[in-house]
Image 1 (cartoon, rainbow, N blue to C red):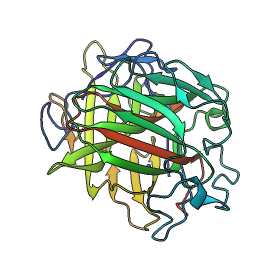
Image 2 (spheres, rainbow, N blue to C red; image 1 turned 30 degrees about the vertical axis):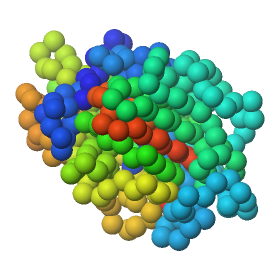
Image 3 (cartoon, rainbow, N blue to C red; image 1 turned 90 degrees about the vertical axis):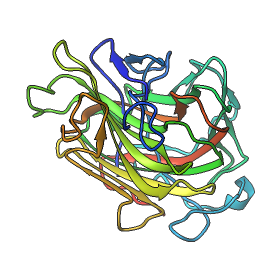
Length: 329
């Protein structure tokens, strides 16, 4: 993993929801922030992270549908309700290919200079005519993200407890040491002990490979100080990320240091982090608490800070984030 290196003391990451460098079953040495993003952090790979998600699909099993385009989704129910942040990606009729630093709606784009393409298209959708699509080439370190921050309702009270959901389709389903798809960040939540107080913190949703197959994971980052290095930690699910539509929902509670991730509306989480995760990059002990952010920005997209082992295409649709529980359809 690439490590976040704070320039202003703030990192970025939302709610409902690696190991040592070079390990094939865990993250490498640091977190992920691309250059030029709307957030305030930079890293060896670049800059920051922002945005949230949710979705509605037409199929069974929690709403996940197969390889359906926009025509199959006519009449799908509105996924937004009264959520503080909801994005269907359907209202930007003038947007197709997305450029680095392009702005539309609440979003600011960050796109690698080479090796990745980001657009809004109808190749795979769960409602409406468009979804966010990020393609990453084989053997590159690259990606694309959309960031949201500032005067959005979700950030009004700098929340420390978020819920969210998104519909996600992956095909081709390439792996790397790990790649990210959603995150929330800010400075550590009120009440964080002195050792962590005021430091940039990030909760990130990510992939980690197991036996050559992507699985869902949480990643955590805490900014370094003059006496304590960057905390780069992760926890991995046993659940594979399918080449089909899946509804991924989550809860992120910074003050309770609790992260839960669910798939396709199941009552049992596919991944739970309570206080701390399973692994941290040395010298941080794996038992160190995951001090979460008071959230000031969010990101959504796909970015790998390690060379891809095969091409990756990710579509994300019907993204919902709120301070109240958000369920898959």
